Figure 1 (tube, helix red, strand yellow):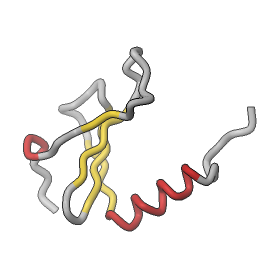
Figure 2: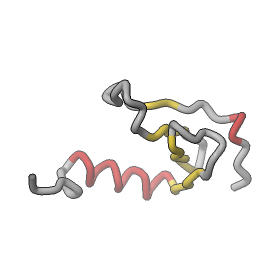
Figure 3: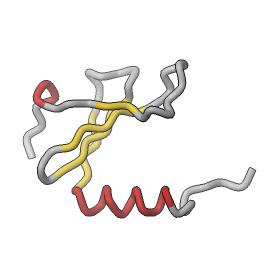
Amino acid sequence: MTLQKNALTWRKSTRSGAAGHCVEVASATAAVFVRDSKDIAGPVLEFGTRDWAEFLTGVRGGEFDHAR
């Protein structure tokens, strides 16, 4: 997919802190894009919508939690 960064609507989590250490996400028909909120002109990761949905399921299920 040819990425046109200006055509995407980027959003940050409502849980992101004021320190700005977060990522932004934008959705398109067949892909989800992720970028560093501090470097909006920098690289962008692209994930298929199915892969992104599986990732979110893992996050919500605690699959990526680290023991403290």
